[in-house]
Image (tube, rainbow, N blue to C red; front, top):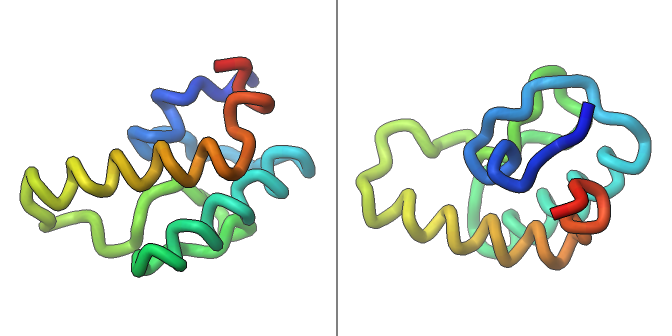
Length: 84
């Protein structure tokens, strides 16, 4: 299954990651944690690239998450994996 960047950013990916995707996701999680987000482990079942505490955040906070996710996806090389 091809992972689109929009799926990752939206937190819609909910599948078992292959080794290449897991490596990218682990780098992404580390980056998001450095920015202060409470992130699940990339190896957790149902990993979806979203902070654990995203539910209940206001629109401004969610916008910032989106910006930070894009930054971390770029650092993790998501475009190489997703083709985006």
